[in-house]
Image (tube, rainbow, N blue to C red; front, side, top):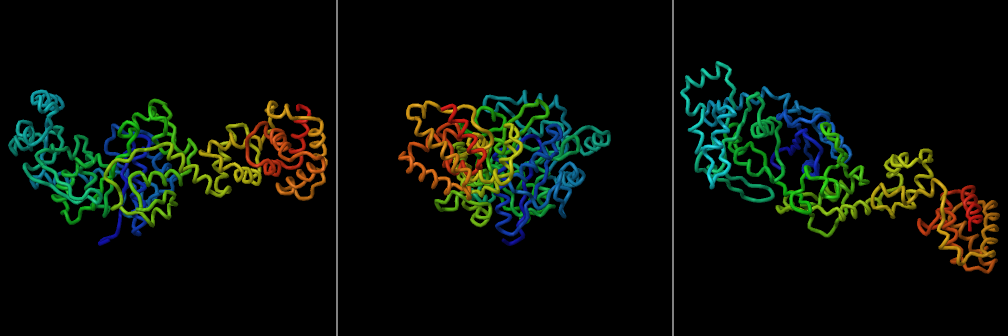
Length: 506
């Protein structure tokens, strides 16, 4: 890299963090770490009308859960703050005024009523949504159509105005996208975007350019929905700071749902989460479930997200965060949209649960148990149980269903599975087995199985005929991990108690 890598994620605090936003964070993070650079989070809150209380905190909580915390931000500090755009308000006006002075922008004094009239008067079949552009601006009330004296009088009188970029006519604006290659735009097809709003706040177009310059951003990665804005931003770089200072850009492909673009507004219809974590809308009280609460591990979540639009050129699918940093390159990001497959996401989670050490899952699983009425579980027992059932769990929320019988005795038994083959000999076997358990020196699955088989041989009963009744005694049905491992985890007192209780029922 010719200059130090500095990348940024610039979310608006307007709601939950959508899958696409998390993937943008991930690619920024991986690129920065790969090249020994910095990853910055800058809060773009210039549109105060869309600000949602709690959304900023939610963004940082999500990044923390994902393990993608920034090097610089509102919360982490840094040398290029403030990292909240509303606190940088005064720095933008001078750039907007400089553009007006240099003839690249102009004051527009049009009222909302005049703008609405323009949309009505210039509407045609070919142009059903006319925009404020080179073909219309000379018919509007702005500093291009008014005399300098009239414009100054309006400004002195405190008349509300915005500053718009003056898009040139019949020019071609080009740049090299790291994913898409050479991209070209015809300026006559782009309207005169507002740069500074009537309340003095910048729009995204001005703020993103000014902040990227002031924060020395080297690479700017954002969703492809921003591609149509690129000519405006390129011209602003050219006019204000010189194209040689502009970051390298990459416009990331969309993440697609079952029916096209994945939208957080339509989250309920997909049947799977679109937010990383639970998001509760403070205005409506509506709760949208997130991947974390659904039972996903953050490692699995970012692993799958990384592959939605990128691969390393091999058939490998399972990547740790460290491996992703090592292998990631923007050149291998696809330009086409990637379809989100929830079943594949669950497969990743299952694989990550299987490969995780039991100890690393303890806190997550323990947090799930109080809601099921289980509160007093030792670390040793929990670790042992997780080790026995984790291979059977697709989601963390599956742990209770796969392990409840370790924490409370069954209250019903699958009697149909045992009654046809249950007899006095088998009853006597289990009574004798209980006695042997009392004197067992080493309580482990191997010892439990050995004396079980030895006693079965003495009683001339096939061990296979006894293991199913034993399992049903301990768990109530034909499920669960190896039966002697279950007995080892339960301990002597609980195992014998369950056998004796079941004998009476059988």
